[in-house]
Image (cartoon, helix red, strand yellow):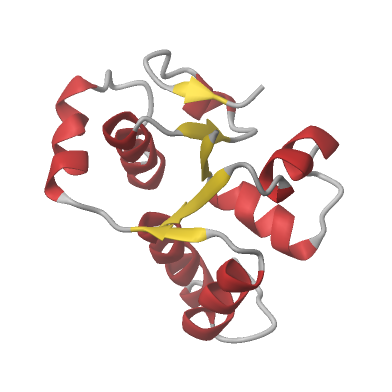
Length: 129
């Protein structure tokens, strides 16, 4: 499987949070799966860090790539073709980070790993259950 982690899933995973289900953890750790973290998630984390809403043990531009690489999670860049997928999305909610993640999943045929019901409302995307 090719998995795209929603931002909160990545943060739960790297912190060892018990909020992350055992099934999600196993799927992320399964060496047969390709796991991606979007540049969009890094952007979101940096904004929240700057606003004082996301405490991290190191500055995010150091900590996030280090954790991504430590856990063998690939980076997924944002490109024009992914952004163009926005035209297909209904206006279910306004979170631009979530909407771009959904677009990337559609463009690259990725399965989104999320616990966010607002993201799962986009029925055209695939989700890990």
